[in-house]
Length: 146
View 1 (tube, rainbow, N blue to C red):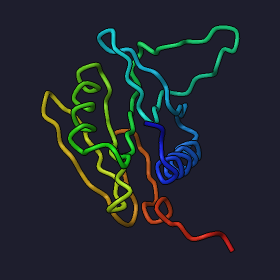
View 2 (view 1 turned 30 degrees about the vertical axis):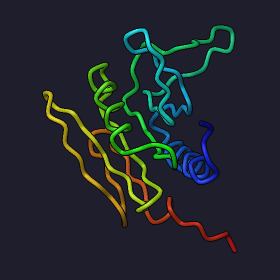
View 3 (view 1 turned 120 degrees about the vertical axis):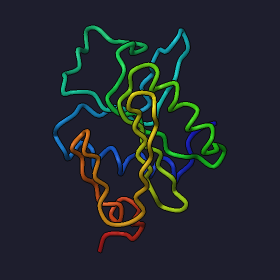
């Protein structure tokens, strides 16, 4: 299923916020190859790197530092967290689950096989592992600029 308006809106806003950190290469809808299967997180973060337009990579085998899933109208939380377990086993360090309702982001970390989660629904999200801070209030603000 193609992403909905709200899904796409949040994805664009989050990409913009992550690009503002200037610490990472931010990629959307990137194909990852894990155990000969294709997975496509909504957003991935890698250490800074440049694109090589003469040589493209159809499916990344190097795992990102961060994989972000934005919950869509046809996706359950369980489906997203099942993907996170696959991502963690493949070497992803952190996964974020963005939930349009109730306007929150949950950061999932896997340390030594133990997955922990912390949810942010207002104020500032702080991911200390990646040293990223994002305003939850600004991300989910739907008012038009004046």
